[in-house]
Amino acid sequence: MNNIWLVMLSGGALTFGMRFSFIYLFGRFEIPATVKRALRFVPPAVLSAIIAPALFMPNNTLDLSWSNYRLMAGVVAILVAWRTKNTLLTILAGMIALLVLQVIF
Amino acid sequence: MNQTMKSFWTGVRAESPLLVGVFPFGLIYGALALGAGLSPAAAQMMSSIVFAGSSQFVAIQLIRESAPGPIIALTIAVVNMRHLLYSASIAPYIEHLPTRWKILLAYVLTDEAYAATIIHYEEDGFTPTSHWFFLGAGLALWTTWQASSALGIFLGAAIPSSWPLDFAAPLTFIALVVPVCKDKPVVAAALSAGIVALLAFNLPFKLGLILAALVGIFIGAYLENRKSPKGCYE
Image (cartoon, rainbow over all chains, first blue to last red):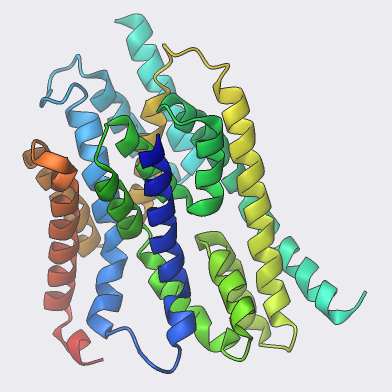
């Protein structure tokens, strides 16, 4: 449990450090243009790296069968996110899809 | 009402439409955090210590998967790297303020507070009380995030454990990633990171996640540079 507090404190300190960084450094240091452009790819890359195993490896091994309900529900969520761009609708659609699949099959 | 308070409340009002989207997130976060085994106190404190929604979801997911502490902290930092950009973008406007103000405003510099504040600064120009607008937007978001986390923690205890609530985390990430996949480099970054995450899943210490993220970022940046080589000399 102590470990969790340490994780939160270090994760929080790193986050605050980044929020404070350029406010503090203003005029003394500029972000290189290459880094600035690369930052755009951070959220899609990190989040996709978490999404893929959650959908394709629900039991820690690759499962491409029809009985992988999380993958099916994930596809539903991706379609809803693509069509609506609505966060809550996406979460609801994916959640309902998974519940329905679990109840029916 | 004096100018200071007026700026503050204008900030709160400008932030309020964004709060509608934030509140349910906090609810889901609170419920998920309990489900992952965090104590109510730890779950609530994460919302004020880290105070960055998507990284808190990521942390919860990794805690559930028993990832090592340093990897979780590092991943929180990677997910929050975009705040470097916000910091750089907002810095010139608050350059003149004393350090204690800069620390306070940096603490409340979230996606939503940044969005409302930078639009205000760029459109309405900068006045001597503008930093109160920033504070108003930031504190409105902070209060909403703490309250919705607390309510989620409270309600989370009532949700039966048979419900696949943990699936809300990847669904949240899908909702965040899909709308930004507007051009080829971003799609390539997302797909390559996903594929590497599957291939490298069995690496120790969840290093596969870090590796996958780095490959995705590199491929996205590489494709973008190739598309517009002039960009290198901006």
